[in-house]
Amino acid sequence: MAELLQAVLLVLTASASLVWIGLARRVHEEPLQPALFCVQLAFALAAGAGACAAARLAFGQDTLEAQRWLLQATLLLGFPLIGAVALALGRRWTWSRPNWGRIVIGLCAFFELARQLGWSEPYALGLGLSSALLVVYAALLRWPARLQFMAGALGALMMLATLPLEHGPLPSYQLLCLGLACPPLAWLILKLPRNAEASGTAVT
Image (tube, rainbow, N blue to C red; front, side, top):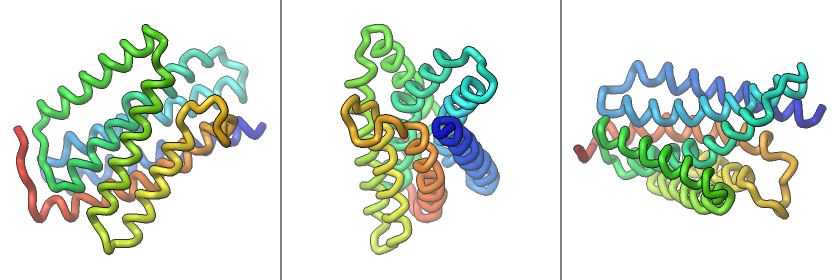
């Protein structure tokens, strides 16, 4: 039952963050659209992982493989996308749609390569740590905005707790940590564009 509650919480927080970002996209200008879409993709993967876990635990559906795949995709694609968006918005960089497309395609290719070679766990650890550091860095760039720093630090901490550490302190609470990571990350991402819109450097 505890794992089911974790799965339900993940579905709720990831879905709410997905909708929250989607609504915010409507009020932001075109240069920010692809960045926010990448964040939506990350939350959609997390929500999918939670939904598969909930379906398996509550209704006995055979969704374990789908759950594992979506969870891996969240760690190997979703987290790096959130880190890249946080970096771009924190540094007030405006990246073009083709650049974001290349980032997504590149991460997808390396995700599948790591999965096929059995390197998913060490690859996820490296990407997760890098992504968490980028989130903290983006939050630090907004200092002395303490709420943004706290949101970034909390989101990054939960990202690290989600990583597949076999002997880590929270191996049984991966879904819970992922669910707790979504709201502060979404809040931080939505706060960063307000600073980025004032002054941006275009990258085509």
